[in-house]
Length: 420
Image (tube, rainbow, N blue to C red; front, side, top):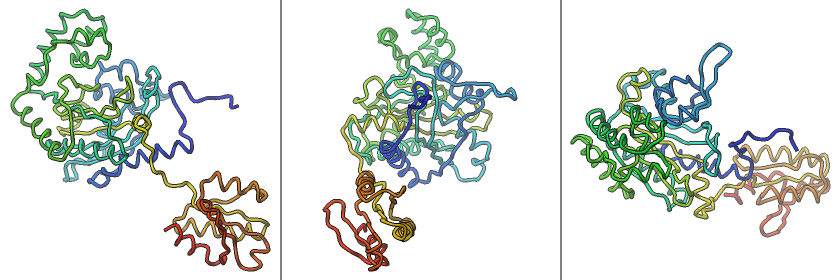
């Protein structure tokens, strides 16, 4: 046993389970790459102020969950708790919005960190794939991202998820709603921390998951009743576009999400098989975030989907992903000459795209064949001194058990033909 263990609330991804996570990431990214989104990667830590301004100083993420620290040089940094603020910062810093082709469409994949109470589906270190479309205000863009996320989940075989949809209005109509909501909340029996939120960001109270708070929110004013005509028209077009694409959704007038930067369209993907941590992903429009972090006005929309929770959703539905075998061919040499020849052949197989492995460590035939079985390889190549003297190797089909002799120089062509 090692002296050290993974920190509380984190996990290690190890084979074979890790192959499932890679497949999920690939499935989420595939429709994005097919829709004009380019890959971006940002540092694992950023200025604390970036998240305080962008995510919101009153959010749980900033006040309770962010891993913040001071460097030896005196800089205040934080491990990134979410991806949008970092991606927008990077796009602004690189002046991608000035290249003349808006929206700037970006996707990313990485690890994020929040100091939360660990439980199934909620970790202190977690993985997400995200997408951001920066610099355009268009209902079709909002619809595109919702459709692409739906497409990604369905390509994995998921079916028991729901899309919750709402509009949070804009700077024209939300202040009126905010005042009405504040008046309502001030009449409730709330703790001191929650009462402070009423003045800073009252919508955060609607997102409070505690039953004692939710019971009191019955009859709270709903934002949809305060939307201006422009926001109503915008939201209706988003709904029409995703409906026309065959994507089902549920209107949820109480959906506000957990970040301060959202405006207009907001949505969440939930899976009822995950218990209390039912959200597998979500996002929305954040038209004012660029200005919050010192950039120009750049209306934008995006989402992030949780890889960890998507894997849990697959397990809840009993979906088994068809994962490619890590090894298709396993080579077992018997003797030094066979070791030299088969190692060269394994290298050739890899060059033509065939997953091949080799029996390392000078094991005997019995031990090497056990390794071949464990590898999951479809074919095993076995060769000894007598075989090589005749210019052949033994090729064994690990599924049928059939074994045949083939020429040493025919190995690559034969396996390419058999494996397609």
